[in-house]
Image (cartoon, rainbow, N blue to C red; front, side, top):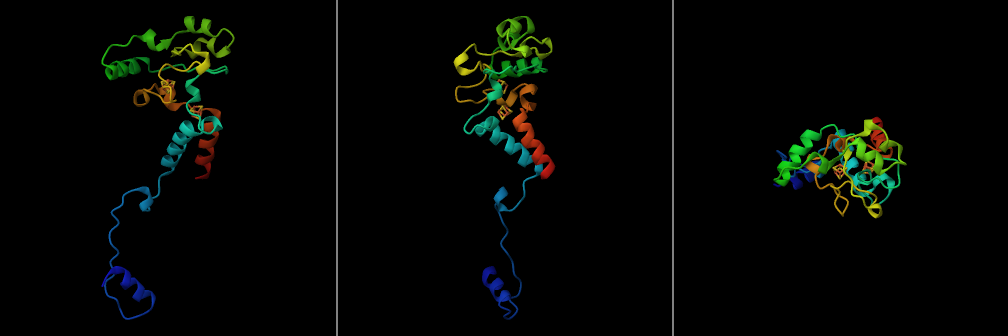
Length: 176
Ligand code: SF4
Ligand code: SF4
């Protein structure tokens, strides 16, 4: 007797179907019934938002990797040595500090009209591509809007939450 007909007999109140065994579920995906953790929900929401709904704009991504027209800076970078070492290993050649980062003395002259580029506390920042049309992106931002050093990116980039994303994370944290 298979398990389904056994269950049917039980439901119909018919004679004792004997031992009922539901086959073991071999599917280990979330859809198999295991609930994601709260942290997993928050992490995947952040991933979705940053790559598909950046700052509330559908099909936009990684806007905090560009300066754009805003008074904004990608810094300060706290783990410059770690990042340089990881990048050198990834590329198979030594990468120089000045190729990757901008210090205050250089940075304050790039955007004299942006207050955060006039504050030494925001340096070193990530070196940007001097391309206004692309919104002065970080040089590691690929043309399709992805971070080309995602697995080793600086801590500043890993923990950054814009106001838009911060609101979403706070909402999920309080309501889940
Ligand atoms: S933190 Fe904000 S601005 Fe940056 S990628 Fe995510 S949604 Fe976009
Ligand atoms: S290193 Fe990656 S995450 Fe950080 S600003 Fe550059 S492109 Fe964005």
